Image (cartoon, rainbow, N blue to C red; front, side, top):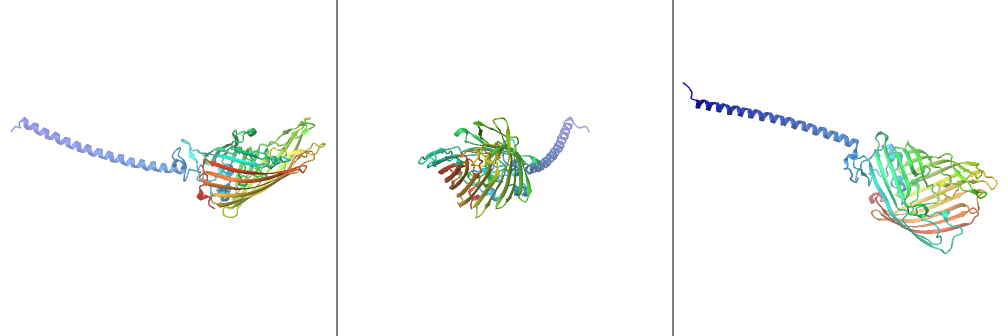
Length: 489
């Protein structure tokens, strides 16, 4: 029996549809398997990315902050200090003590340790690992001298004229104590951390308000180059004063230098520096002036110990002092000095700082004698051999907190120089300084204060003079360094 073509066509159509359905089912199963495999691979990649990100965050915690964002609660640290390094670099009392000058904020530290481990005010420069803080202050001083019109912005007893011009008062307003600065912090891997610090004020030459460079230094781990506080001084042992000059007996000068510091363990550290010598010598023979010479840099050393309640520092300086006489001959002498300073908390946040310096040929380092050409002088009018002048300088300051936003300080100081027979009768011999103030932080970054200081000076002949000064100061800091709750006594 033969099938008709119509029947055959119908059978072929059924076979074709069945084959297509089988093929579609097989294709769908293959796609589902491929998708499953891709999803599994994606999950593995996500896990690997999360693991890599965790490793990066552990190595570079600054990645947690968005580039350009302001660092707030827990900012990235260029280099974490070990407990021993922290103990050697800065103790709790040093870290918490506050002065109007903020010199402790500007000073270089062992291991580049910050005053505040949270780095307030720093932000991450976009595309880098560098932290930057732009800071400074706008300041106005109102100064009243009841009977000494010739003194400048800073109260320097050695500048009191002898004799004093009586009944001649003077009022002066100044913004020269205003400052601006930039502080860069950079991680340096196994080398530690690097810091570059630059700061200006407005004490330009000849009484102008032109910018004047105060600090410009770079420190990689514990190697420092640039201009900053001499290694012979202790910026953590200054009184809390409104006056830009400060107490007469403090060793206080900023110099170009190369310095190396190192930890000794147990809160102790040491440093050695070669500094710009710049002999402060000036006299004339038969009307012809001599020329100061410096054949070697000043060598300074200091040892320091930090503990929870305070610190102690012992420093020394060794100098070559020389002049070229008008006839071409050279005279030289050896200069040296020691400077013992320290501070301690006594009641609550109340603290005492003290300083005692003695040496021969160290006048350029002391506040009241810097610039007076008192490092050395000839012995007599007939003996032109050079003598390094002995100098003694001492001061003390007590700081008291009335409450978290108000404090006062009482500061006393004394300086004396042993003159030679060659020096004229009007040469500076000694001076004293006293000051008391009230400093108030009423709100935010605004500080206001009032201060009274009194100075007395005597020259070689025994003639003397004295002068009082009243000062009112207002200052606004660009960055508030320490929250009020951290300053409570």
